[in-house]
Image (tube, rainbow, N blue to C red):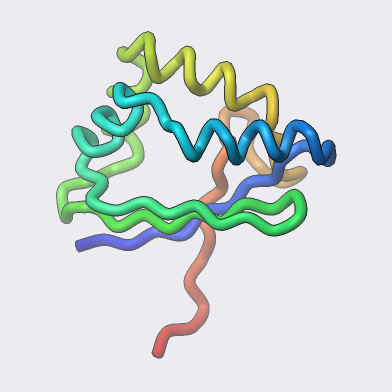
Amino acid sequence: MKRFALTLDLKNDPQLIEQYKEHHRHVWPEIIESIKASGIINMEIYHIDTRLFMIIEASDDFSFEKKAKMDADNPKVQEWEELMDTYQQRLPFAKADEKWVLMEKIFGL
């Protein structure tokens, strides 16, 4: 199994942050299905202030490239991502096409 940690910011607006959290309490079934179909076994998102932190546990054959291709071909995922753009603020060092930024693991116990 593979494990990844990613981060992203939210726009600094308490009302938008609450709406974002509400959307994640009721994620569309098509999005859950798409996540699982990509090889992701477990996904958790944590929040503090404007910062988000995501942990993904995925099958050994999972790849972000494969998931990106699947997402690009899925109109419902594209609709969800467009909606999430309302709330998300890319990190200043993110690449042009990057929302969630992969973090480097620097310690393990």
